[in-house]
Length: 387
Length: 132
Ligand SMILES: [Zn+2]
Image (tube, rainbow over the protein chains, first blue to last red):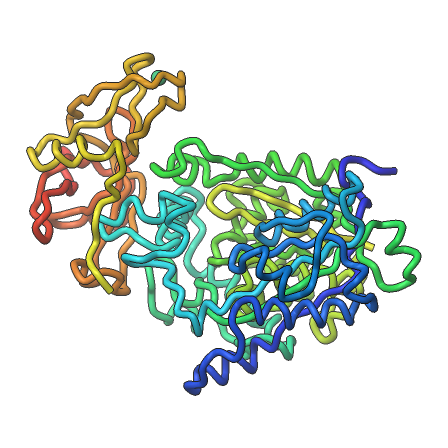
């Protein structure tokens, strides 16, 4: 049974850099150990070893947005039958598309970002991303800057409309820190309470510092292989069961879709596509990995994908459903808030680990399907990983 | 750090000229009458590339608001606010709320755009004008 990109490809190898050690060393004043291509290269060697294949089997290469494609391929010695540059979620989808169409069989996806040692600014007069997203810079004359502020503005209205409280939003930071406390690779491991959250400083009110992602150096890589060939390797392959995408572009800079419907129509369209392609529904999902540059992505995804009813995300979270041991553990590695800010790349390899059953102390029991979701500025994407 | 500055692409100048004169003009489609904000070369509704500049009344309602507690710009010492206002003519603009903020939620309050001097540049700001 194949439908669209369902079961066309599987993840056979994952790798990451030592971001916890690097973060600690840089806090102590050490310079970055590797630049962005170097971090991507280190993750790639580990993903290759995890897959148990040689570099020469790789015939496709997709690099993340923070490293140049040609230079990355040159460094890794990969001449590709098919290649490109994409963010984490679209890289996975493009790998599946390339494999489905016969343009490649073994695609390496590599990402490296030295955003901490390289001092990337996500707000202010030189805000990153402004060339791609006009809303990141257009409202600066009124001091309105940073992606955090865009989400704070959006979520303030959602809170007023649904009655979701700051304490309920704090459940996200608390649940993800709990997960991170069980992840030896997470950067932030000290558990916190909702009281700690409420007492923490605001950055852009109503969002607290604990609602914001970390800024750290790191790299992630995945090896994605044609499904039949992956089966023959006999290794612990994780299938990609479905993908979906919907982009809200109209009115983006004046923030029409952000402030009127909170991008939920995009998530609902993606839900219909991805669940249909995978042949599963929200009740079959054991864990969700949700792109969390800010905590408020989580309640919006819970509502958008039908894990809870309209306006019920606050209550759903307060009842413990998103914690390890709850109905739908979310961001089981700690996510961007507590593990590492790898712009969605870390979420892919955590999904793979949970399906493999190698999550250690944070393993979700009976984890057959994991749903990855992101909604960055109304560009909603989903991927369902499974056995 | 640096100071704020407006995006000044090919279509942006007329709006800032109108703000300097104290009466916000927005770009209006000559084909279907839809406003374009930010300004641009084509109407997303009807794909007409013709437009004119029309003064808006400056009245609207607060859609949402935030308060910045971090310093991002030399000309905006924290704390400071930013509000999204739905103008009566339809477009959503970001601006700053001046004067006394309302008790509790700011959302839905009636505002009127004023024009203020900000660090050598004239720009709009919103003032609450709720009846009663
Ligand atoms: Zn038109």
